[in-house]
Image (cartoon, rainbow, N blue to C red; front, side, top):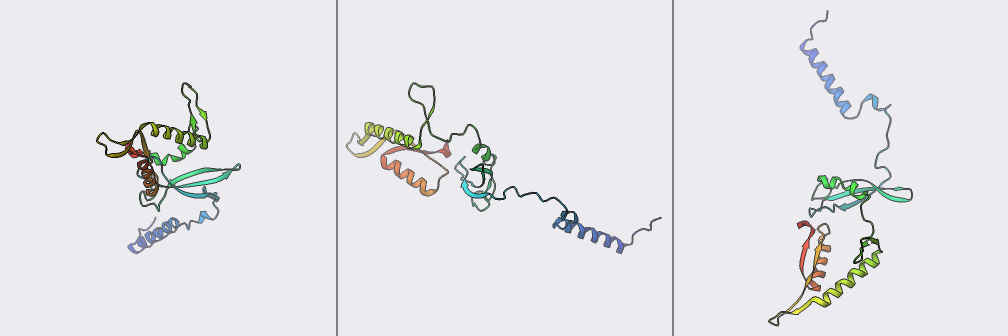
Amino acid sequence: MNAPLSRRQFFRVCSAGVMASSAVGLGLAPGQAVAEVRPYKLARTTETRGTCPYCSVSCGVVMYSREEQGKRKIIHIEGDPDNPVNKGTLCPKGAGLLDMVHSPNRLLQPEIREAGSSEWKTISWDDALSKVARLMKKDRDANFIEKNAEGVTVNRWNSTAFIVSSTVSNEAGYLGVKMARGLGMVALDTQARI
């Protein structure tokens, strides 16, 4: 028959249990030496910091990419803990960035649909920028208002609007607005309001 524990023996058993569980919690488990060591998921990756493209909050993200079959591929995206905006957290949309990056529906090159056509065709970036610049100049030349009805100089271009990205830096946003205002555009907005 077992004798009941004395108060002193009870404290010794409890102290030994606390010390053993603390050692295991600190990683000093005896089974750890024989455990299989798995390779770290982000080993041999390149870390790149960026901004989430979804809204105007501009949360910081850290993207990890690795060379796979001669091509660099993003394998993991997480919140940037050093970013003062989100401090490493991401909303559900931001947490799904990797799915957006690898989506088969994501456009990687500019496409154009000519008037009267039902088919989209891929064009080069140079062709796309040249076409946009040519159409902007044509519209501005046709619709630019230098003076209003009272003869006051207004330099307005009312027929075209400009949408600014809400995920760019302050400097890029400032330059975008200055360019649009310099061309005379009155209608300016940002994707944060859409």
